[in-house]
Length: 403
Image 1: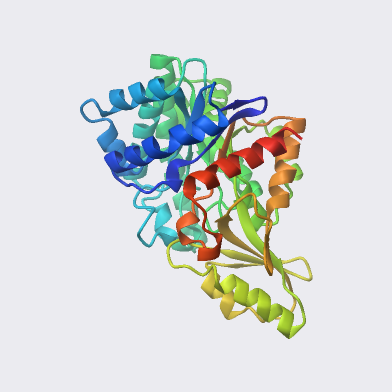
Image 2: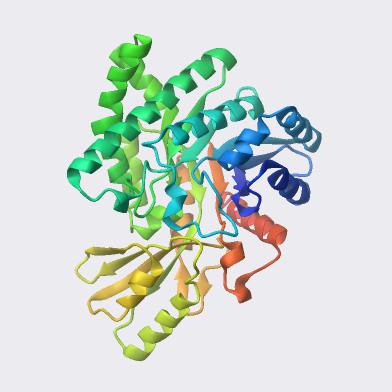
């Protein structure tokens, strides 16, 4: 829905359904009721997540036209898509396979271009669209420096083929669509500075040459096209897990004229790690309740000397839970936005409030998307009816934006 601070929605990756008929059914069941409560008299935006299979099915026969008609009838619109999870995301073990296939592959390239074509058909006139995507690959698949350099190069070239397709799509339809790179813990890019370093050292130099050769663009025109079509997905949970300085990251992005295509509004788990054995044990036991087998829950431990220690998953961190010198844990676990305290644990809700305050003062993206997808795997005592939970999250964000 339109707010004074951009289009606000939630991501439909919250709904199960890896094939289009199942996902469409889930959307039909949930969205009208949510719209009725939040935006009964105005259009309601949707953040659409399509698996690769669902994207192929949607463009077959008259499925896409039927969806467009349904959107019109319901006074809904699609302005952003989640193109990060390619395959199954529910009722299966996801873990690091959320990055499969990565940006070194043709499959990722073709999937993203397909999503862009779908989004161009769905996107209202005069509105930009965005597709969030993987930070190129999973870091631990490529440990050697030489191999990592080659991965950066190949992934960047594939992404530039998408940029070329988006340029052509704009020429054909008049619609601007950007890919929004989403740094996350243990991605090849997991922090704001790493994203900006890649942008300056790989994307722009390779991109200027690529677009110069293929489209005969000048350096200035190529740079402008890249900056229009490759932007940042600012996932607050991911940056909070890494203890990032939100104001500092945004200042650096502005200084480099790099745009934020989407703010993903999401919360992580956190806790101070007490020195006293009994108190620390209660924190450890609380984290154990969130140790589920479907998604990766990377942990970043802040040491008393300020250094950060990163764990690939919660079980790895739990093995060293009694390590001395640890001051705080933050875990990649998209918990509900509207709950700050989980007994011995807390959420990074204050990071969300800080980013939204910065956004209110100086808006830096037109797209805001809530991405809490862990409802099915939350501890039982935290599970609420799904539609009620989505409404509550959207209302919480609206209230924060209106402060």
